[in-house]
Image 1 (cartoon, rainbow, N blue to C red):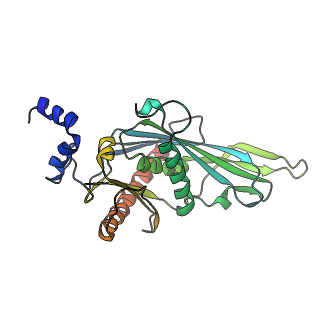
Image 2: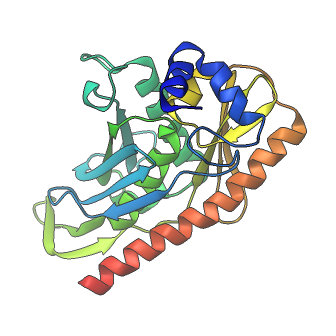
Image 3: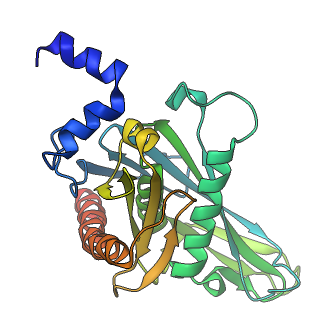
Length: 281
């Protein structure tokens, strides 16, 4: 096909164009059906945050900054701190998003991240308690998309985990006489990361063909989306499937197996990047 004809196919019949590749067990960008795009990671890029990370999966780019603040614990959980994630999909990352309050996709992504934090136990809320019933840490995790080309959930989870592992909290003591907190910015401690969740996202084409790490165009043409989150013990933390066509048990198991392998890849990548940062220091 000439470039002119190919571009015409893409515009006029995008679904047929993708089907012609799927028949050959490949995709328009040259990947196999079960192949992720190149994934890169940087940590500590936001100097004003307590921890940060920048992730790229193909063109999809996500940055996560973590800001820690001292607060009063809730009456229901006096011995726990809390984590507040927020996913922002601003107009700058794609023309599909409009200025104004968070849209449905951003809200759903924020809720998904909150559910993963809770189900995976990446951090135990008890670890964020400073003085039971009086003082705790709140971690505000701001996750922003800088370039949207599909599969933001996988990128958000990598960015969040890497940023948490990059976070250092100052030492806090409570003055017994004044009962006020005293923060020592010179002495910092890393967060205790209990689990290392990672996700793998899939799209279903024509109710039967499964592809991993979809681009924005592949997402828009698919009949169902699925995200599977696992940890380093191979434990299934979450399965997120917002409607669409049903999946057989066999296909779901295939997704879980791929997600487990992906978790190992991401765990290695994060450790490698964090080690190289320590070496540079």
